[in-house]
Image (cartoon, rainbow, N blue to C red; front, side, top):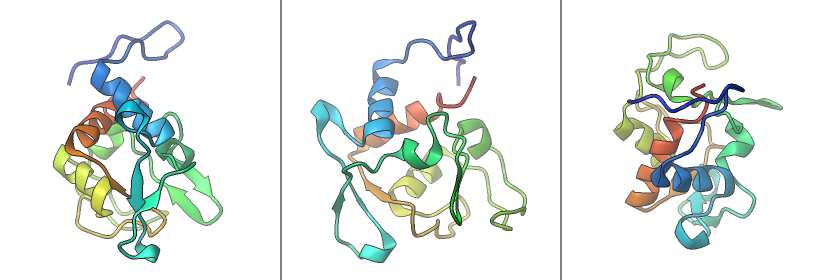
Length: 146
């Protein structure tokens, strides 16, 4: 993975077209040409829900570093964190294997972590086309990597 150009203030400079489309998904839950995206929740069964106001950045932050909302801890999804193994530690107290692109795609679309464990039921299981998923993965490799 090549490093992105970084400005003096620490912000990443220009995104590629793929990364820009991935950022659109991450920050607006809209795909190509502004198409509204859909997701599933474990608590809603197989029914697809429109992503009106539900965006990745709401929970994981614009920088991908996650946070806490009440009793829910949103994971740090920066690529440098995801691509390393995680030892058992709070708040989850379970270890996980490092993510690969395929495992990260599975987490986004099926809600399974890199070790095959269910992610929290509040994590949307996104319904994305393969190009949308690839664009999102490309953007996630950039977000939070300053």
